[in-house]
Length: 172
Image 1 (cartoon, rainbow, N blue to C red):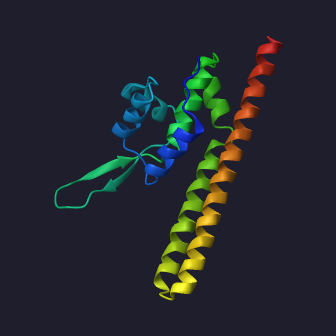
Image 2: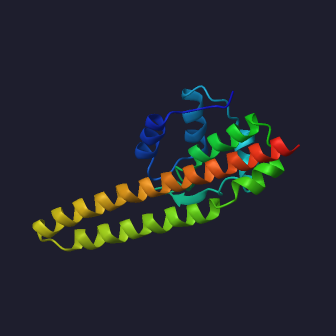
Protein backbone atom coordinates (compact mmCIF):
# COMPACT_ATOMS: atom_id res chain seq x y z
CA UNK A 1 0.00 0.00 0.00
CA UNK A 2 1.51 3.37 -0.98
CA UNK A 3 2.18 5.91 1.78
CA UNK A 4 -0.17 8.85 1.95
CA UNK A 5 -0.73 12.20 3.54
CA UNK A 6 -4.02 13.83 2.63
CA UNK A 7 -4.12 17.17 0.84
CA UNK A 8 -5.17 19.01 3.99
CA UNK A 9 -2.11 17.71 5.84
CA UNK A 10 0.17 18.53 2.91
CA UNK A 11 -1.26 22.04 2.68
CA UNK A 12 -0.70 22.57 6.43
CA UNK A 13 2.89 21.38 6.12
CA UNK A 14 3.51 23.63 3.12
CA UNK A 15 2.00 26.63 4.88
CA UNK A 16 3.86 26.13 8.14
CA UNK A 17 7.19 25.45 6.40
CA UNK A 18 6.95 27.90 3.50
CA UNK A 19 10.62 28.85 3.95
CA UNK A 20 11.62 25.21 3.49
CA UNK A 21 12.56 22.28 5.73
CA UNK A 22 15.74 20.89 7.19
CA UNK A 23 16.40 17.16 6.81
CA UNK A 24 15.48 16.72 10.50
CA UNK A 25 12.14 18.48 9.90
CA UNK A 26 11.44 16.34 6.81
CA UNK A 27 12.07 13.15 8.78
CA UNK A 28 9.87 14.45 11.62
CA UNK A 29 6.98 15.24 9.24
CA UNK A 30 7.03 11.71 7.90
CA UNK A 31 7.46 10.15 11.33
CA UNK A 32 4.54 12.17 12.75
CA UNK A 33 2.37 10.94 9.88
CA UNK A 34 3.51 7.34 10.26
CA UNK A 35 5.24 7.21 6.87
CA UNK A 36 8.56 5.39 6.98
CA UNK A 37 11.49 7.46 5.72
CA UNK A 38 15.06 7.08 6.88
CA UNK A 39 17.81 9.66 6.71
CA UNK A 40 19.72 7.28 4.43
CA UNK A 41 16.77 7.11 2.01
CA UNK A 42 16.48 10.90 1.98
CA UNK A 43 20.20 11.22 1.18
CA UNK A 44 19.93 8.52 -1.51
CA UNK A 45 16.99 10.28 -3.21
CA UNK A 46 19.09 13.46 -3.34
CA UNK A 47 22.15 11.58 -4.68
CA UNK A 48 20.01 9.97 -7.39
CA UNK A 49 18.68 13.38 -8.45
CA UNK A 50 15.12 12.56 -7.42
CA UNK A 51 15.15 15.42 -4.92
CA UNK A 52 16.90 18.79 -5.09
CA UNK A 53 19.96 19.39 -2.97
CA UNK A 54 19.50 21.52 0.11
CA UNK A 55 20.45 25.18 -0.03
CA UNK A 56 22.75 26.41 2.71
CA UNK A 57 21.15 29.26 4.64
CA UNK A 58 23.15 31.22 7.20
CA UNK A 59 21.78 31.42 10.73
CA UNK A 60 21.54 34.68 12.60
CA UNK A 61 24.04 35.17 15.36
CA UNK A 62 27.75 34.90 15.76
CA UNK A 63 29.26 31.49 15.03
CA UNK A 64 25.91 29.92 14.19
CA UNK A 65 27.01 28.55 10.81
CA UNK A 66 24.53 27.59 8.15
CA UNK A 67 21.73 25.13 7.77
CA UNK A 68 20.65 23.03 4.79
CA UNK A 69 17.10 23.88 3.74
CA UNK A 70 15.06 21.86 1.24
CA UNK A 71 12.09 23.38 -0.59
CA UNK A 72 8.82 22.38 1.06
CA UNK A 73 7.78 20.62 -2.17
CA UNK A 74 10.10 17.72 -1.32
CA UNK A 75 7.43 16.30 0.95
CA UNK A 76 5.13 15.73 -2.04
CA UNK A 77 8.07 14.47 -4.11
CA UNK A 78 9.04 11.91 -1.48
CA UNK A 79 5.46 10.70 -1.28
CA UNK A 80 5.36 10.33 -5.05
CA UNK A 81 8.66 8.40 -5.05
CA UNK A 82 7.40 6.08 -2.32
CA UNK A 83 4.11 5.58 -4.17
CA UNK A 84 5.95 4.70 -7.37
CA UNK A 85 8.13 2.24 -5.46
CA UNK A 86 4.98 0.64 -4.02
CA UNK A 87 3.76 0.28 -7.63
CA UNK A 88 6.94 -1.72 -8.41
CA UNK A 89 8.77 0.96 -10.35
CA UNK A 90 12.52 0.47 -10.42
CA UNK A 91 14.78 3.32 -9.34
CA UNK A 92 15.75 3.83 -12.98
CA UNK A 93 12.09 4.00 -14.05
CA UNK A 94 11.41 6.45 -11.25
CA UNK A 95 14.36 8.59 -12.37
CA UNK A 96 13.10 8.60 -15.94
CA UNK A 97 9.44 9.13 -15.14
CA UNK A 98 9.88 11.38 -12.14
CA UNK A 99 12.05 13.84 -13.97
CA UNK A 100 9.47 14.02 -16.78
CA UNK A 101 8.65 17.68 -16.08
CA UNK A 102 9.86 17.83 -12.49
CA UNK A 103 12.73 20.22 -13.13
CA UNK A 104 10.47 22.57 -15.07
CA UNK A 105 7.87 22.58 -12.30
CA UNK A 106 10.54 23.27 -9.68
CA UNK A 107 11.91 26.12 -11.76
CA UNK A 108 8.41 27.55 -12.22
CA UNK A 109 7.73 27.29 -8.49
CA UNK A 110 11.02 29.01 -7.65
CA UNK A 111 10.48 31.74 -10.24
CA UNK A 112 6.95 32.47 -9.01
CA UNK A 113 8.19 32.65 -5.42
CA UNK A 114 10.89 35.15 -6.41
CA UNK A 115 8.30 37.26 -8.21
CA UNK A 116 6.06 37.31 -5.12
CA UNK A 117 8.99 38.28 -2.91
CA UNK A 118 9.88 41.18 -5.22
CA UNK A 119 6.27 42.33 -5.47
CA UNK A 120 5.96 42.22 -1.70
CA UNK A 121 9.05 44.38 -1.31
CA UNK A 122 7.76 46.98 -3.76
CA UNK A 123 4.39 47.19 -2.02
CA UNK A 124 6.09 47.46 1.36
CA UNK A 125 8.34 50.26 0.09
CA UNK A 126 5.32 52.24 -1.07
CA UNK A 127 3.91 53.46 2.21
CA UNK A 128 0.48 54.51 0.98
CA UNK A 129 -1.91 52.28 2.94
CA UNK A 130 -4.66 52.09 0.32
CA UNK A 131 -2.22 50.89 -2.35
CA UNK A 132 -0.57 48.47 0.06
CA UNK A 133 -3.83 46.83 1.18
CA UNK A 134 -5.17 46.46 -2.35
CA UNK A 135 -1.87 45.25 -3.76
CA UNK A 136 -1.27 42.91 -0.85
CA UNK A 137 -4.69 41.34 -1.49
CA UNK A 138 -3.97 41.06 -5.24
CA UNK A 139 -0.58 39.48 -4.57
CA UNK A 140 -2.15 37.05 -2.11
CA UNK A 141 -4.79 36.09 -4.68
CA UNK A 142 -2.12 35.60 -7.34
CA UNK A 143 -0.06 33.48 -4.95
CA UNK A 144 -3.09 31.27 -4.32
CA UNK A 145 -3.63 30.92 -8.06
CA UNK A 146 0.03 30.01 -8.56
CA UNK A 147 -0.24 27.27 -5.92
CA UNK A 148 -3.36 25.94 -7.61
CA UNK A 149 -1.61 25.97 -10.99
CA UNK A 150 1.39 24.08 -9.62
CA UNK A 151 -0.89 21.56 -7.90
CA UNK A 152 -2.82 20.97 -11.12
CA UNK A 153 0.34 20.62 -13.20
CA UNK A 154 1.77 18.11 -10.70
CA UNK A 155 -1.50 16.20 -10.78
CA UNK A 156 -1.43 16.07 -14.58
CA UNK A 157 2.17 14.89 -14.49
CA UNK A 158 1.30 12.23 -11.94
CA UNK A 159 -1.61 10.94 -14.01
CA UNK A 160 0.54 10.83 -17.14
CA UNK A 161 3.20 8.86 -15.30
CA UNK A 162 0.63 6.47 -13.85
CA UNK A 163 -1.08 5.90 -17.20
CA UNK A 164 2.28 5.29 -18.88
CA UNK A 165 3.22 2.79 -16.18
CA UNK A 166 -0.14 1.00 -16.53
CA UNK A 167 0.38 0.81 -20.30
CA UNK A 168 3.86 -0.65 -19.79
CA UNK A 169 2.53 -3.24 -17.34
CA UNK A 170 -0.29 -4.18 -19.72
CA UNK A 171 2.16 -4.56 -22.60
CA UNK A 172 4.41 -6.94 -20.66
